[in-house]
Length: 361
Image (cartoon, rainbow, N blue to C red):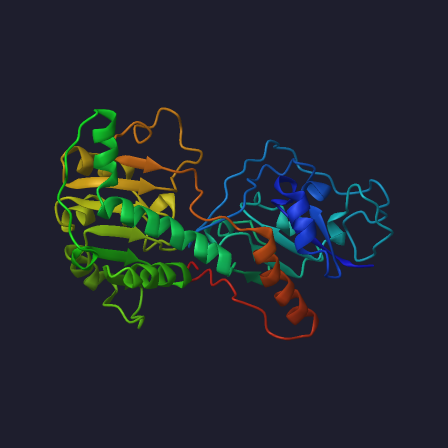
């Protein structure tokens, strides 16, 4: 009988997930086949060094433990009976691909062998009681996820560079007026976070001839000016006209987009946040915009998602909002990462990249 992969996002794209794993000896099932929509966690299909996904669960029960159609197990042992198309016992699950599972849900799967994050970030798995002990957790590394984030960053960098928000405002006023324009080589872009996503965005922007620099926890050699550690952050900010945040959310990076750091940016700078909502202090951003120190912001992630209707960011004329959509984990491309690691695991070979919860990514 094939092993079973449980996917938290399966119900949103069942045909795509089924097709992605069609040629691999693995049974792919929806999260609700075990938990019945009642684990209280959030579904979604993750992005970002962070990412990503914000589909919402609508239950708060304790989930089923599987004795439905064709299931003989009761979740307490290793035995597996014949499986039908209905509910599954927790003991029948071998692998899980998840985003924001409810605390304790994964621990209820006693035969779990590997846990895959549905997005690049792992902060959604870092809470107490979320993970069963001893089960490897793998970060999502997916070329399409990286490409999508690069598209988002390049789009908004170009939008700010070419003063598109100002031109759009002029159009609404039926105002015909040319605005100043500078060459890309004179536009300084600073990227916070030089991991897979940040590095790819930096290279794409450099190809467009922007003056790109980056900042990370430790030194990086990506062929662009690189700053590292808290002591070098002010220098990066001082030479940045467009600041892009693609950091993982850790204790050290939480609140990094704050009044003190906004003040270190040149007047008229813009901010793009596609990392995590916890990086941004929203009140500080609104204040910097109102005072005119910052010219604009593009925000894809928020401390509270979905962003409440009454949040002043929604109506601010110089803020562009997307609903955690900068880059999505697509079944066809992400399945290759999952399949490769399951094959390696079955063969007794190392899997990865493994999440490092001590470092936060």
